[in-house]
Amino acid sequence: MTHFLRRLLPRVGSALRAGPGYARCVALAALLASCSTTPPPVEVGSLADPPPRYSIVVIIHGDADYAYHDTLGKVHHSDLEILTRARTVGERNAEAEVFIFHQIKRRHLLFFIPRRDGRAYVYRNGRLVSRQSYWRDQGASPFDPEVRLYHQLAGTAASPPVRQFFYFGHELPEIDGTGYDASYRKRPVTIDDLAEAVKSIAGNGTKIDLLGLATCFGGTPHTIRALAPHARYIVASPDNLHLSSFDLTPLESLELESDDGAVAAFADRFARNAFERLASEVQTVVSVVVYDTEDTWAFLDAVTGEYDRTLASTLGRSRSSSHRCDCADDSAYALPGMSQGLTVLYRAPRFGRLKGKVGHSGWECRRILE
Image: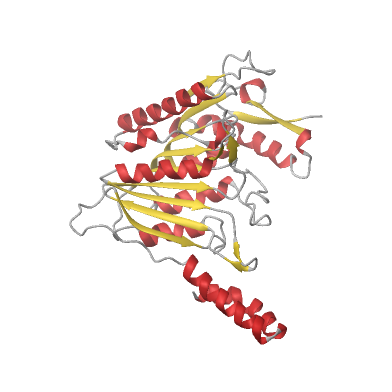
């Protein structure tokens, strides 16, 4: 409430200067807004519940255009559909704590009173124990509010380990990142910001078992290098990813073990399910890759310098001055052992110039056009 009033005071001051009647309207609007945008947490858990064995964290970016039409012309919003599936995951994991953060577009009541633009849901032992809204612009990093809420809402001081982390959204920029959020266009958002959030949530220098990056062009050297220190396995798409979506169905019934063989098997099962689902639904390219992060370091160490120099050279240039390509198609990156640690699932698009492409290295690079 204090933060809300602090935002509102400048507007109230202007209203007072405009006249007492208008000021009363503003005061009433502030009261209504505070009631409508700050719902108390919903607590429906039981003290008799056993402590959760593991946590799953899902961040869904909805502050952009995620609308699409199906073949019947019906409008869908992919971020809302992912939210529904994530909540189902929360309901069906009886031994888990599931944290879901939905970043939504900034809205206003009566055109000038800001409303909270984030929603958090926490499930514990299959039941919703907390639901609340929050401000997304409170922190140096764009993911600070989610990190802070995670630590506030975790059930115990000794929270169960975060075993899985998923991000759904448009391609996260590797550099610059201004304009990513429709509501905060001047605030940069990059893959390095997400990596810091994963690090803070995992805590104590530990690695999350599986990190799912459901965005387009997630399999670049810079992106995987940023995330690799914080996850044992990463599932990402090096190319376009239809609707920025991976199917969450495999998370609905989990029997998680922490040994490497079990984690690798689940990462493979999750990736194959996502690939098969996409391949059955779309005619565009389908690419899903599992990155065993320990086995990717040799390739990353060999190409990071070249890739980052190319990346830096794109700053200030138009989009048409560079293009993306399979790293195997560029001699600077086509090195022996580049496929080490990768399980690549790929199907070429059914149309266009790449419809005859038979495979993909699993790495996506940039090439400057002269």
